[in-house]
Length: 473
Length: 152
Image 1 (tube, rainbow over the protein chains, first blue to last red):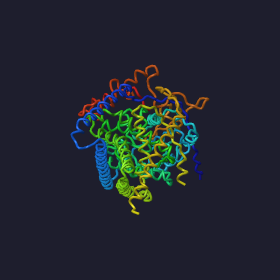
Image 2 (spheres, each protein chain N blue to C red):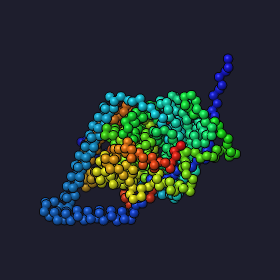
Image 3 (spheres, rainbow over the protein chains, first blue to last red):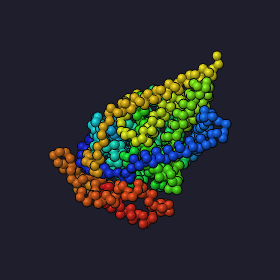
Image 4 (cartoon, rainbow over the protein chains, first blue to last red):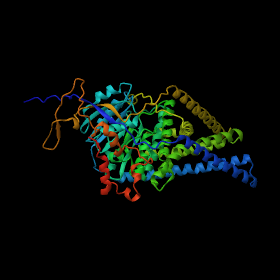
């Protein structure tokens, strides 16, 4: 009897290719004109407000000091109402979504999928990331790594991963594109151009997908109206106070809101670590563009603007490495805030005209509120309570304010941790979440907003990685 | 001593400290960022890249045959001295030669809108929007647009 031949990994092929590097770019902005217009509008409105106050104040019993205190209290009451409305709307919608989700049966739709991994200096995480993809419980997919001109050992590691690799359910083709550095959007576009599938999963080089991710995410595309599906991002490197707080933030702040948006089928940001797209939807919007610092938010808004639905899939999970020191966290949040504001500004036509696409207008206003108004209100409230505590001796007000907010956060933390079957030890962090963590983030958000409106130049920057494999141990 | 004034004092101090920490950290972040600032390189329309793949690409295969199930089998080609297979070019490549690419790009979906920054979906009226994938006229224009691009 003949002995079976030992399977030999065939040699890989190398090709010189040419990649289309063009993007759909919006009209060139006249920044000077925009600034002048902004100064004119805000100036006129301010003068009008001052004039109204000057004319009406003598008709009331209020003094200037009284007016400031009165206005502050009115603002805080409005803030409190908006805050309560936001919390309960999100909780109810998320509850409806989860309830609906548990009774809807999953489809057997299983087309071929391309997974695109853009990698810039991801040598530490890339192997772990690709190995997690080989464990996916899905039978027909390929992996495309795009090395975006990395300066570390990413290229060597990626080349060692190329081949017909043995996955859990099938043999998986792993390809690599080595290109000069051009940013994440261009790297993703290169991978999408090369992909052979009608459905593309875009992820980060530092993310790890859980085995059932593809199976759950792709089931939504059974509906021809769905253009993209946002996944559920979780923090892999827990154990430090900052990463634990981020883990809670992802569960309570981001995923809960995404569940609520999922109920309306208009998720506003498909997260970078895990997003599944119909290629037709990507073609419709001209693929990714690098004119904003939040290409994921920009892409989602474009998809929504064209009329596609964007769903949320809580079981399509990606584990990602969170910044473990304050500087890295601020860098990330600064970029997110400016990127979101850039994306909102890019779609301002939809912001001001709900007749174009009402859903998109709603999404844009909610993003504008979360990125701009919410941080401003938090900072203002804290300033107000510090002021009245020091100068008016009403120090108990800050305590009651904190108590109210902490209770709200605690309640939603318990709910979201229970729904997501997360670690219960994250719940106590809710006590300091709003008053410490969110305040730090909000100061950066507010500064980033001011800088964005002033048009101060910024760079993408790269977060330092310690490695997912290391954090798992 | 009552509990609420003590707790209030603790929270007041913590909030002020957090504010100072947040502003300080932000200033430090901006100082650090300023040190490593670099210029932005100009982006080309087409860039050269390298593809490493375990199987031969469709465009490059000279001789193919099919199995009974319809599966395509590729035969191994020769390589040049540098280890690269240089001819023909890999997908996604344009069918037209380089000189004519500027013309073809006008009809491609990558072309920026001429008059305003719209996406394709916005060009339709609300009635057309829901027909864009099914209506024969819409499909025809879509096909015409894609004729100049070859994706594989």
